[in-house]
Each structure stands twice: as C-alpha cells, then as structure tokens.
Image 1 (spheres, rainbow, N blue to C red):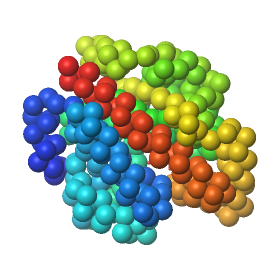
Image 2 (cartoon, rainbow, N blue to C red):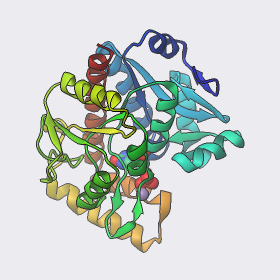
Image 3 (cartoon, rainbow, N blue to C red):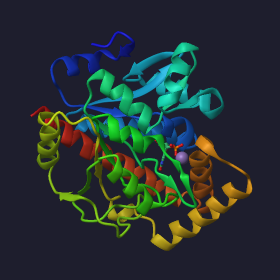
Image 4 (tube, helix red, strand yellow):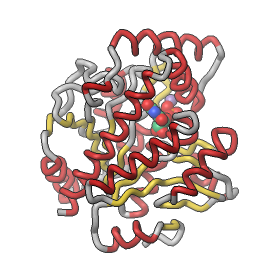
Length: 302
Ligand code: PSU
Ligand code: MN
C-alpha cells in the first residue's frame, strides 16, 4: 500500500480484504457548503454508505499528510479551518500542499488521484466541474482527470452553472463514458434532466460493475462517470434554478471572479438566492449518490 498516504484503520482493512470502499471528496466541506450543513452532509454520506454495507473514505490533506478516511473530528477540524485555511486541491495543487505541509481539500480531480493511489475504485460526489457558461476556456481539471485516471465517479450530473453541451463534448474528447443511472438523459444536478442524451443508460449496480470490469480487462486508463438524477421530491423547479444561476453568474462576472474561485462563488450565491432551497436538493443528491456508489462498490467487490 502507498506509503505517502495515511489510512483510517477500517479503510486499510477493507482495502486489504477487497471490500466495498467509497471515496468522498472534501472540497464540498470547505468550499461547497456553509457550516454546519457541510459537516452534517459529510457525515450523512458516510452513514448511508455504511448502511449499504460499504466503508466510507473521506479524503483530504491535513498538515501536508494525505489522509484516506477522515475521522469525524478531522471533518470538524477541516470545516473549522474553512475556505481561508484550506487550499482547494486539484492535480496542480497536491504537490504544493504536501511539499509545504499545508491543508488541502480535494476536488473531484484531487480525490480521483488520491483514490487511485489508495486502490479505491468508486467515488461519490455531488456535481462535477465542467466548462463554464460563457467561458469555454475555463475547463475544470475534473474533466481532464476523468480522461486519465480510472475511477468510477458517481454524481448528479453537473450544475447548469456550467455549459452542459460543451462539458459533454470535452468528456467525449477525453474518452469518458457517461452513464445515466435509471435515465436516458444527463441529470442537471438540481433538476432530474438536462435533456441531453447520455452515452448509455444503466439500471443496476451490476451493469456498472460489468462496464468497470471490461475497462480493466481492456487496460483502459480513463474514468467512468455515473450520473444519477436527484430524488424527485427534492428536485428544484427548473426555472427557479435557472434564474438563480443566471443571476449568480452575472454577479461573478461583475465582481471579476475567475479561475478556481468561480465555482465556490457561484455556489454560494445560488444558495443565497434560493433561500436554502438549492441546499436541500444539493444534500439530497449527495446522500443519494453515496447510496448508489456503495451499491456499485459492492457489485464490483462481488
Ligand atoms: N460542483 C458542485 N459542487 C461542488 C463542486 C462543483 O456542484 O462542491 C466542487 C467540486 O469539488 C469540484 C470542484 O471538483 O468544485 C470544481 O471546481 P473547478 O470548477 O474550479 O474545477
Ligand atoms: Mn472552473
């Protein structure tokens, strides 16, 4: 096992036994949600993975040490440090936080890299990064990582703060299969459908496991994206989400926000503008994705 990583004992044991481990990201704790919803959501995702017979492994960098399987105390500590005290870590940031012994919260890209080092196949998150609306040059490192790191990422699609058609184009170029879990169309995070077709609909964890097994047999190095619609009762009406996103994007533009600060800024504004209704959809999607990811991890562990 990788010597540069620190493992929670239960994660180490589960991996040694080939058990169903599910990786979780930490940017949603520091940059995605306000306190205490961030900690509550992180713990709720862990709980639902355990209920499904899986083992959760929340990933972050604390004092330069890459940790696979944060304790509840470590999740609290990360939340208390907050955005100001923790670097948002995609690929380029990992050597900086490790080399200079800083704290880091891993994005989808960062979490995929660490999960792969750790020998974890399945990872649950909310929305992946993508191509920003009106800024086709701003392509999330998440999409490039999906093209080169063989991890199965379970998400609720992507928020329509992104240009979803362009995001799908980049995924195609990167060689990433986009699967719709119980759906023929790409979910748009707050709402159940973007209207855009996925590459393949799947309806069971076993079908995802079969695709992952084939990827391994073929020696292919790309990630697999499993997109799960937000539960119906928690979805946000499409026009309400759209209005908030358009306004949040306009404010980001006006404030001159760019680079890695765009996504956290827009997410916080959308939350403000929908009076917390987006937060309910967000949390429901995250917990639901964690459940599906645990079922897929079990099917893969066989
Ligand atoms: N989208 C969400 N919620 C999030 C993120 C994206 O709906 O919390 C976070 C994830 O960690 C994702 C990152 O990997 O933002 C993407 O940031 P960027 O656009 O800077 O690549
Ligand atoms: Mn971005």
